[in-house]
Each structure stands twice: as structure tokens, then as C-alpha cells.
Image 1 (tube, helix red, strand yellow):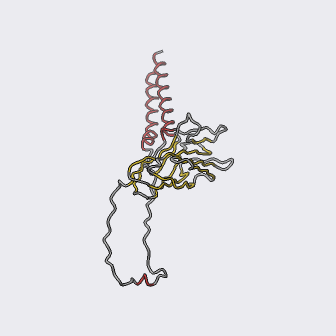
Image 2: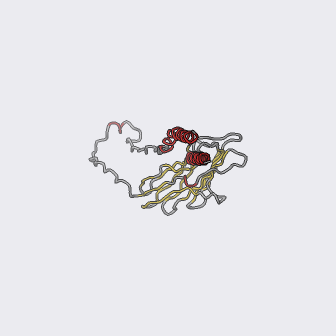
Image 3: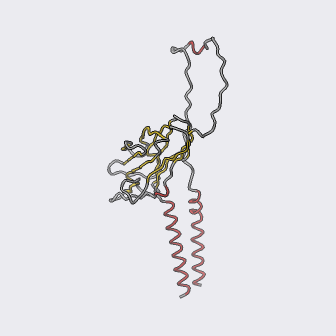
Length: 238
């Protein structure tokens, strides 16, 4: 009897471990990338809106974005490369909506960028662009599963916001002044416009932060834990 009780305890613990691991790995969420951004006043700030459906098949996403209108001025939402059809609404100051969906009969899997949001920095300070998510509400961010009920599988606690710092980043590098000269450079003489023009600096695109280290540890240690539990059960039975 005592051995039977121990077997039940060990089996229950193993099931709990497996279910908790599954919930942490397969949680569906939205992310604003980059998660931190520095800019100067009047700069245009671009944030990617990414979706991670975990292991599920999804058909659509509703994303409600909130921002401080005294710090940022909304500019636009551009559709990403994830959904073929999208809707957007920015008529309410301080809020923006993005809705993306698949074609009829299709579904999507895996992570991807569903949209790019642009803001103009208005004044110095630190502010947060966040994803509104409250599953008890109807007008909330959703990740809809590929099933008959279009089940909302989003895990609000897993969503990632973006913190914007305006006018408090690194100081700009001061270039060496170029002496004034009355001689026109040869390359300027060859142009129709009478000059070479300015140089446009392109911001280096950011990449998604690497994650999943803890998940990999769990994945590779799971077989050892299972063997240990089996050994304990056999020891109790023998």
C-alpha cells in the first residue's frame, strides 16, 4: 500500500512538471521590438509588432497599442510580411489598432512581424508603448486559434512593451568643421545640380532578442528526469 501511494505521488509530480513546462513553452504573445529605444526630439521612431503563437495554428491577430500622446505623435501602421490582409485604426489619440488575418481556409504558424508602427518624438523624457491586453474585455489584444470558435490563446503576461527614451541617449559625435573654400570640387562640377548633396544615414535594423535558454535546459534535462523517476518507481516495487 505504501509503495502504491509513492507511485501515485511520483506520477502526479511528473504530470504537473510536464504541464507546467508545456504552458511556459507554448504561450502565445505579442512583442514590440526593440524593447528599448533612444531618440532625439522630432525623430521618427519605428517599432516592429511581432507575434509568437507558440505551437498553435492561428488565423488572425487583434493588437491594441497604447502610447502617451504628449510624448509621441502617431504616424502610421504598415503591414508586415505575416498576414496578407490587415486593418488599422488610429482615430483615437493615444491608441492604435491593428488587425491581421489569413486568407480563407489558411492558417499561420511560427513567429513573425505582423506590422511596423511609426511615431514622432515630441519632447524629452521616457515613455512606454504598450500592448493593451485584458482577456475579460472584448476590445483587447487577441491571438485567435485555428479552430471553430477562433479561441483567443494570448497570454497577456507574456506580452512585451517598448520603452522609449527621448533626448537622453548618447551624445552626438561632433564632426570636424570643414574649412570654407571658394574652389568648387571636381565632382560637384560634373553634377547637374551643382553639388554632391548630403549623406543619408540608415539605422541598422535590430533583431529579435534571443530567448529560449531556459526552455533548452528543460528540454535536454527532461529525459534524465524521466529516467530518474522510473528508477525510483522500480526501486520501490522491488
